[in-house]
Length: 145
View 1: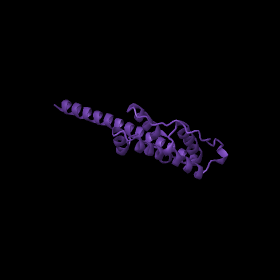
View 2: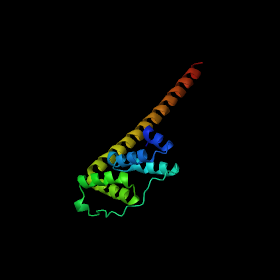
View 3: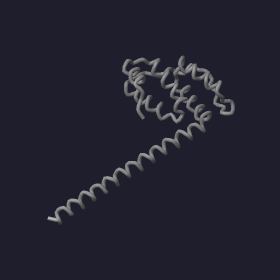
View 4: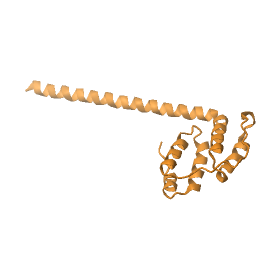
């Protein structure tokens, strides 16, 4: 997955706040966390110190009580206290609240991958047929001489 130019620029400029905002937003945009994991790897590769020590706030781990309001409050707090603990909690919350969306995204990705493999197969088959046609034409021309 290609990372946005905005993210790459923020990394290049060591703009930790902007990197954190983009990572936070990616939790909702891509709740499969594929993009976020790539961003975290790139931030680590750029030796950007993203994480704060957890501020000690008791995090609600009761899935039954998770809702959009709690997620929103934790998203807001994440920008003031970008701790691994809070980010991990938000990943869990998003996985629960966006379970249907996650399934849809995964199905779309699988369909795109399958379509891509099918296209590659068709292109390869077309190439083989073209090569056979050219070979047949060459043999026919040589045979007629």
